[in-house]
Amino acid sequence: MAKMVYPEDRYQLHVMLLDVGPAPWRRLLVRPDMTIGELHRLIQLCMGWGDRSWHEFWIHGLAQFGRRRGCGGADLSGMAEEPLSSFCLTPGERIGYDYGGWRCQLRLEKVMLVERPCFWPICIGGKWGAPPEWCGSGRSYMTHPQRIRDPFEVIDLLADLLHEVLEDAGQFRERAKQVIEWSRWMHFDRALLNTSLRSAKLTWVEEMDDAFSFATGD
Image (cartoon, rainbow, N blue to C red):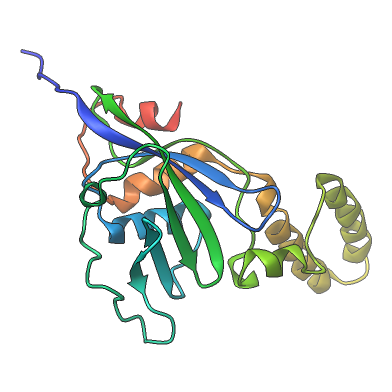
């Protein structure tokens, strides 16, 4: 007998990195019982960050949750295990997120019913990769002299690299690494992100044959 599947609520979240252009964004489906701590880990994965700094959440414009800056990673509020559903968010409401100077805006786009079991959370849309984390903030990245502002700049840089490889192989390797890092913003791989989310097991996973292909869009 086929297993009965009942519809369940899912939050559709739009996550956008502020202060940079073009702005990287992700569209996510998450369970309402996802905790604040899990949401932090989710954002880190979405932007390719390494969780090396303090972070704060701003909910309803007042509450703060996360690790306080300058306090050795101490919990700011003791509410890392609070689920999103406990904040009674309504469609259109925004959550602020600050990670060591990088600012994101999270918006609850809608609450929807899903019937098809899958692993959660999943990314269903997005564009642009995040800038190098070590830049420290969106404003620092936008004013950095090495920032690649246009995809066509990569062509010029590659031409310079071909010239350099003939002169100094070591210098070529170092410059090639820089070009790759600074051009990362031009590409976002949704399937790769969903693979990372599945490996992280942030929340609940229901095994089924086609769950992975549904989430990755394959």
